[in-house]
Image (tube, rainbow, N blue to C red; front, side):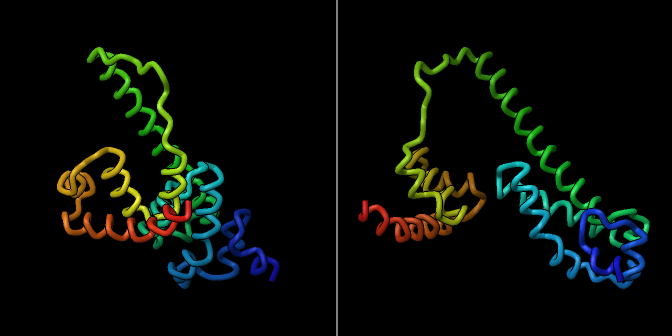
Length: 182
Protein backbone atom coordinates (compact mmCIF):
# COMPACT_ATOMS: atom_id res chain seq x y z
CA UNK A 1 0.00 0.00 0.00
CA UNK A 2 2.90 2.32 0.74
CA UNK A 3 4.07 2.06 -2.89
CA UNK A 4 0.58 2.88 -4.16
CA UNK A 5 0.54 6.14 -2.21
CA UNK A 6 3.90 7.10 -3.68
CA UNK A 7 3.06 6.20 -7.28
CA UNK A 8 3.72 9.11 -9.59
CA UNK A 9 6.43 10.73 -7.51
CA UNK A 10 9.94 11.27 -8.74
CA UNK A 11 11.36 9.14 -5.95
CA UNK A 12 9.51 5.99 -6.94
CA UNK A 13 11.70 3.03 -7.75
CA UNK A 14 11.14 0.18 -10.15
CA UNK A 15 10.02 -2.05 -7.29
CA UNK A 16 7.48 0.62 -6.25
CA UNK A 17 6.34 0.87 -9.85
CA UNK A 18 5.97 -2.84 -10.46
CA UNK A 19 4.36 -3.53 -7.09
CA UNK A 20 1.54 -1.14 -7.99
CA UNK A 21 1.08 -2.26 -11.60
CA UNK A 22 2.83 -4.34 -14.13
CA UNK A 23 4.25 -2.12 -16.87
CA UNK A 24 2.42 -4.08 -19.53
CA UNK A 25 -0.86 -3.04 -17.82
CA UNK A 26 0.02 0.64 -17.60
CA UNK A 27 -1.97 2.81 -19.93
CA UNK A 28 0.30 5.36 -21.58
CA UNK A 29 -2.42 8.01 -21.77
CA UNK A 30 -3.07 7.68 -18.05
CA UNK A 31 0.66 8.07 -17.38
CA UNK A 32 0.76 11.21 -19.54
CA UNK A 33 -2.28 12.67 -17.80
CA UNK A 34 -0.76 11.96 -14.41
CA UNK A 35 2.67 13.48 -15.13
CA UNK A 36 2.48 15.99 -17.99
CA UNK A 37 1.42 19.08 -16.02
CA UNK A 38 3.99 18.50 -13.30
CA UNK A 39 6.78 17.95 -15.83
CA UNK A 40 5.83 20.98 -17.93
CA UNK A 41 5.59 23.23 -14.84
CA UNK A 42 8.93 21.99 -13.53
CA UNK A 43 10.61 22.57 -16.89
CA UNK A 44 9.03 26.03 -17.12
CA UNK A 45 10.61 26.98 -13.81
CA UNK A 46 13.94 25.51 -14.89
CA UNK A 47 13.97 27.27 -18.27
CA UNK A 48 11.84 30.34 -17.47
CA UNK A 49 10.13 29.68 -20.80
CA UNK A 50 6.66 28.12 -20.72
CA UNK A 51 6.54 27.25 -24.44
CA UNK A 52 10.01 25.69 -24.45
CA UNK A 53 9.01 23.70 -21.39
CA UNK A 54 5.84 22.39 -23.04
CA UNK A 55 7.80 21.41 -26.16
CA UNK A 56 10.46 19.65 -24.09
CA UNK A 57 7.79 17.82 -22.07
CA UNK A 58 6.13 16.64 -25.27
CA UNK A 59 9.46 15.42 -26.63
CA UNK A 60 10.18 13.60 -23.37
CA UNK A 61 6.82 11.83 -23.54
CA UNK A 62 7.45 10.97 -27.18
CA UNK A 63 10.75 9.33 -26.19
CA UNK A 64 8.94 7.47 -23.42
CA UNK A 65 6.24 6.35 -25.86
CA UNK A 66 8.90 4.94 -28.17
CA UNK A 67 10.30 2.96 -25.21
CA UNK A 68 6.92 2.21 -23.59
CA UNK A 69 7.24 -1.54 -24.17
CA UNK A 70 10.50 -1.44 -22.16
CA UNK A 71 9.15 0.57 -19.23
CA UNK A 72 9.52 -2.36 -16.85
CA UNK A 73 13.29 -2.16 -17.42
CA UNK A 74 13.46 1.46 -16.23
CA UNK A 75 14.39 1.81 -12.56
CA UNK A 76 12.35 4.98 -12.25
CA UNK A 77 10.25 5.98 -15.29
CA UNK A 78 9.24 9.35 -13.81
CA UNK A 79 12.82 10.36 -13.04
CA UNK A 80 13.84 9.19 -16.52
CA UNK A 81 11.09 11.37 -17.99
CA UNK A 82 12.30 14.44 -16.06
CA UNK A 83 15.90 13.79 -17.10
CA UNK A 84 14.90 13.58 -20.77
CA UNK A 85 12.81 16.76 -20.46
CA UNK A 86 15.67 18.70 -18.90
CA UNK A 87 18.08 17.37 -21.53
CA UNK A 88 15.72 18.55 -24.29
CA UNK A 89 15.69 22.03 -22.74
CA UNK A 90 19.49 22.04 -22.61
CA UNK A 91 19.68 20.87 -26.23
CA UNK A 92 17.40 23.71 -27.33
CA UNK A 93 19.42 26.30 -25.40
CA UNK A 94 22.66 24.96 -26.90
CA UNK A 95 21.21 25.31 -30.40
CA UNK A 96 20.24 28.90 -29.64
CA UNK A 97 23.72 29.71 -28.35
CA UNK A 98 25.32 28.13 -31.43
CA UNK A 99 22.99 30.03 -33.74
CA UNK A 100 23.78 33.29 -31.94
CA UNK A 101 27.51 32.64 -32.31
CA UNK A 102 27.12 31.91 -36.01
CA UNK A 103 25.06 35.07 -36.43
CA UNK A 104 27.69 37.13 -34.58
CA UNK A 105 30.47 35.68 -36.75
CA UNK A 106 28.54 36.32 -39.95
CA UNK A 107 27.69 39.91 -39.04
CA UNK A 108 31.28 40.55 -37.93
CA UNK A 109 32.60 39.06 -41.18
CA UNK A 110 30.17 41.17 -43.18
CA UNK A 111 31.48 44.26 -41.45
CA UNK A 112 28.21 45.13 -39.79
CA UNK A 113 28.61 47.95 -37.34
CA UNK A 114 27.38 47.78 -33.79
CA UNK A 115 24.33 49.94 -33.26
CA UNK A 116 25.13 53.10 -31.30
CA UNK A 117 22.19 52.63 -28.97
CA UNK A 118 20.59 49.42 -27.88
CA UNK A 119 17.12 48.86 -29.28
CA UNK A 120 14.32 48.11 -26.86
CA UNK A 121 10.83 47.05 -27.95
CA UNK A 122 7.90 49.39 -27.46
CA UNK A 123 6.55 48.36 -24.06
CA UNK A 124 2.98 49.29 -24.98
CA UNK A 125 3.13 47.23 -28.18
CA UNK A 126 4.56 44.22 -26.35
CA UNK A 127 1.94 44.51 -23.59
CA UNK A 128 -0.86 44.54 -26.16
CA UNK A 129 0.51 41.49 -27.98
CA UNK A 130 1.34 39.43 -24.90
CA UNK A 131 -2.08 37.79 -24.56
CA UNK A 132 -2.65 37.01 -28.23
CA UNK A 133 -2.43 33.38 -29.35
CA UNK A 134 1.04 32.58 -30.69
CA UNK A 135 0.20 32.57 -34.43
CA UNK A 136 -1.73 35.83 -34.19
CA UNK A 137 1.14 37.39 -32.23
CA UNK A 138 3.75 36.21 -34.75
CA UNK A 139 1.70 37.45 -37.70
CA UNK A 140 1.11 40.84 -36.02
CA UNK A 141 4.79 41.30 -35.14
CA UNK A 142 5.91 40.36 -38.64
CA UNK A 143 3.35 42.72 -40.16
CA UNK A 144 3.66 45.74 -37.86
CA UNK A 145 7.22 45.44 -36.56
CA UNK A 146 9.10 43.80 -39.44
CA UNK A 147 6.89 45.46 -42.08
CA UNK A 148 6.50 42.24 -44.08
CA UNK A 149 3.71 41.74 -46.60
CA UNK A 150 1.08 39.06 -46.05
CA UNK A 151 2.74 36.98 -48.78
CA UNK A 152 6.11 37.22 -47.01
CA UNK A 153 4.53 36.37 -43.67
CA UNK A 154 2.87 33.34 -45.24
CA UNK A 155 6.26 32.10 -46.42
CA UNK A 156 7.86 32.73 -43.02
CA UNK A 157 5.07 30.99 -41.10
CA UNK A 158 4.57 28.20 -43.67
CA UNK A 159 0.86 28.94 -43.95
CA UNK A 160 -1.39 30.30 -46.69
CA UNK A 161 -1.77 34.00 -47.29
CA UNK A 162 -5.44 33.65 -46.40
CA UNK A 163 -4.47 32.19 -43.02
CA UNK A 164 -2.14 35.15 -42.42
CA UNK A 165 -4.97 37.57 -43.20
CA UNK A 166 -7.22 35.65 -40.84
CA UNK A 167 -4.66 35.77 -38.02
CA UNK A 168 -4.11 39.50 -38.57
CA UNK A 169 -7.86 40.16 -38.62
CA UNK A 170 -8.40 38.22 -35.37
CA UNK A 171 -5.43 39.98 -33.77
CA UNK A 172 -6.84 43.39 -34.74
CA UNK A 173 -10.27 42.46 -33.40
CA UNK A 174 -8.75 41.37 -30.09
CA UNK A 175 -6.46 44.39 -29.83
CA UNK A 176 -8.96 47.07 -30.89
CA UNK A 177 -10.73 47.37 -27.51
CA UNK A 178 -7.39 47.29 -25.67
CA UNK A 179 -5.87 49.98 -27.89
CA UNK A 180 -8.94 52.17 -27.59
CA UNK A 181 -8.87 51.85 -23.79
CA UNK A 182 -5.39 53.30 -23.68
